[in-house]
Length: 120
Image (cartoon, rainbow, N blue to C red; front, side, top):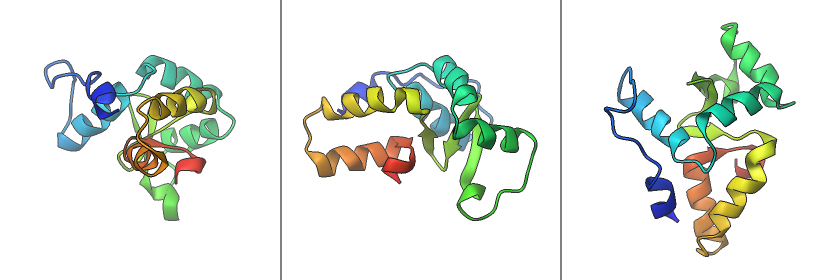
């Protein structure tokens, strides 16, 4: 399973980075079975993520858990995890299950790469 995700990582020369954290966050996005362009487009259409995206772009001061959200390449990050729009959640989940790692290991990997309410 990790081999699948790692196969999508780009080298630092291919990424424009501001610092080490940005490089890591961008690699998380690039590791997904959907493109960053698709994520950007669907994040703006997602009923839950679009209002959050607008708040982040407007520079609103988010409190509590909300303070952990950032925008990288037009995608919402929750800490180091990529927020997945509802449209892609099933696809990402199927990809995770394809590794046949068992539920505990699969959820652990999911929680290190992606974020949506089900994978808190």
